[in-house]
Length: 340
Image (tube, rainbow, N blue to C red; front, side, top):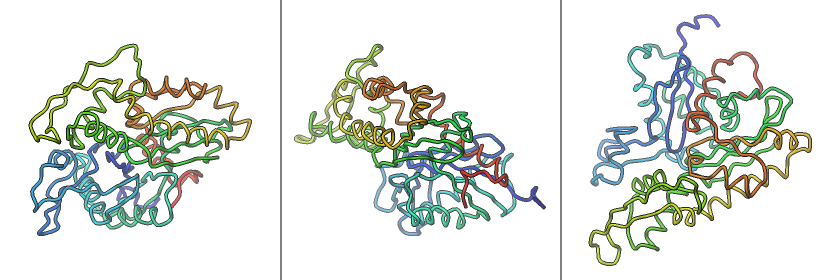
């Protein structure tokens, strides 16, 4: 490409929970997808980790916004500000002083035309001259190291913050897929409700997330159980401070309904699989990526229910971002899984 040295390529995993940017094969930004906005001026005060620390602690003049909900843009202006701000967060040695940006962004495989347009418009408003899109399960497969263009069936389950993406991939395309809006955020919400109803204690989103990380489990029996986590918060009835120890068995029970929805979606995709690809999947196993797969015992639970091997990939949080970076390097080579 002429003047390619004036064009800078960025790969972005625009996630509901976290946004990652890859430049020159390196992850240069990895921040929570959240912005803090001054209500009076409409300007961004903080974004990423700084804004996350403000979440739930602001006064009326400051509003914290998560621009993405269920994997898609819910607040267009906040999304644009966040993308622009994240690009500015790229370290100075990797920074560039040119408006010519080319971006590859991954999106949920169940995105509608309107949702796709919102992502494209946000990136263009934030200064990107050329925007290419890739579906999340395809990016995850690339990030794991699967040869997606081979005539072999591979199945990927990507449990993110807003959506769970399940797809069978072969010959550079998605053969069958499903995108459900039951994922990490729903697990967090389940924990909040459980603490409220079972223990009469009010916990915020950040605390519920901490419970999920410390004692989140998909099974009621684990070989190496984590220690109980002490939760502190106000008693709903008395408003007096309360301290409650929470164990992994409780959390496994409270997440059961949401996990059953994920299992049902996996079964739906397997039912749609052509017989030859189904045989490949049984032989290769099913790959698990995304932050949601870090629940303790999830792979074991799915194997027990579905009788196929499930493999949690190395660095599941980074697989989609790495795959988006790989797709960026293939720009202009006519690969079937990138679209404008």
